[in-house]
Length: 245
Length: 338
Image: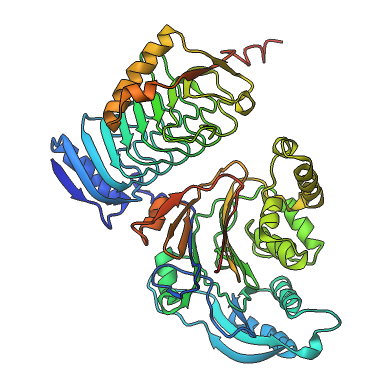
């Protein structure tokens, strides 16, 4: 275990220290006193476990390809931007535009998230990203989603409290969103269909949530007790004829 | 050219804090809309591109105001800021005989600001409050604070801004905040409706001279709140009006009220991405655009309320806030003194 005290460090200094430690073969890194440093874990490729204590700055794990990052605190904006593989676990809440163009790996958040989470996520065959949000989400959740899986749990919400904001799945043309509870069609994009889960969905959901619950130390059974709805793009090529006629 | 040059990636950011109990907070923390002077005096902070211009402005001030005090704004030598405009401040009150008919002192001061900024080349009044003072310039935020000796001031509200100019020039007058009387605005984003807002404001006598979009937000709030008498929440709803589909979903009274507001104040709508902190005599307001295209985080601790672009900016001065939340798009956070 290699320890870094990030208090007062500028983002470039801190990221050089983390990269240096990985280059020396460190497999476990703990960073104390993180507060606002941008780009932590960005572009990192090796298999490394990084624990961050505090609130890391924007673009955490952008373009990341392999490592696991555990944030003991809240996250800010643009986490997992275009991430390829690896995992980010956040114990608290996180901000806007998480998983922008994310194309692989996992983002697990215990708390709630802001606007435009999962915007333009994409996936092909086995290369499929996953975002699981324990709390609630702001507007434009899963906007322009092209692939992958997003799960919204709404844990600790009161009865009738909306899980997601307006414009849910607007522009969605691939992937799937599972919502634990009910979904108001009026808040969804026009392209979004709402369906019950089939056996394949249930298996996918259980697989993802088993790992999520283990990360968060919560009971899978209690999470699965409540019913889920599935959101999917009703047309996978909504503009397929745009230039044909 | 060194191709390996490492650019310091920056961005706009804003931060503010307010004591609801009006406890004075030192500028060493970050900084405020100051309680500079007694309540009957206005403080003009003026920047002069050319020191000679000073005399034309002072002639105009002498003819219209009782001037209690004139001094250079105190600054400290900072290596990174080798040159600056001449920075002066004047503590003044309008001459009684100049307030013709119904004219209020605030109106007279606004007229002076508009006249100087648009007619006297190279002079800009960048602060004109009774109970608010603005300090701004070109440089790293920490250096600007050191330059203006911000840690020597105290106030119950502080706002601060770091600008990464993208669309309009980076110059001393174009730095944030943009102020008028006791209104002060720091803003992150870009106001795409600048042209519409500017023409609308010009109809009411405002002159937009500072080459930056944020200026419209300051004058718009002065117009809506001080001159048209809107309350703060309604003014915010004119700036970030609900979408028609949300208005349609309201009850009849709500539909009528918001339809009227959008019809009357269509030209006051700020379109485009923004998060704004808006300081005034009675409190501090944070507001986002209607679809949250810029970040805004709020927090509380004891009687203090914090708002900033990033949570870490708040934690840098308040490591353990009691409550941290992200305001919803278009819904103002309105903090008033107790």
